[in-house]
Length: 180
Image (cartoon, rainbow, N blue to C red; front, side):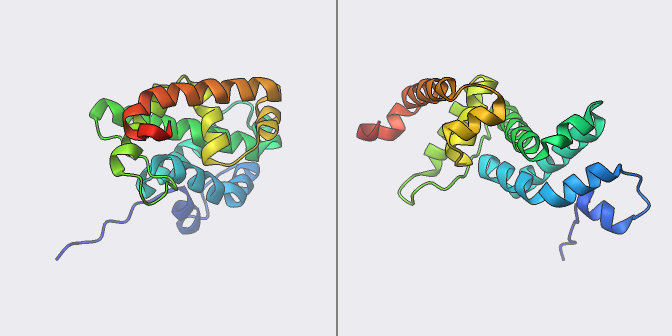
């Protein structure tokens, strides 16, 4: 009989051990935004275990930051961006193992091979274009919203999105066929 292995995470630790000393701001940010961080990571990694790992990494990084108060002032934007970047790190690490897997809301006719190819192509991108692509197409933000989040112009976001899409089309050409 298989014994169930329960993974302990930050959320379960908070419930099981109320005596854990965590700064109040961090705990409030975690309680308010852990769902959003997990969903963001899951959309990119396509794996609940990886998404949970990303969730922990994001909040541990926030805990270790010297300027935690600064990050918490704009915590939703910071946490979303941190989740995207940590998720892309997971994909890049998997690429080395040739086990990249990315599941997003593709139409049913798309193949697992295309999802894997997209994961590999995203992992090849520089961090800023990958982040902007994920915010635009995986998270659904507008160019204007992304510009405000990142402190850059809407025009620059549009240019980066356009160039990134061109690069991804080249990478995925054999999978996209006539649709590219």
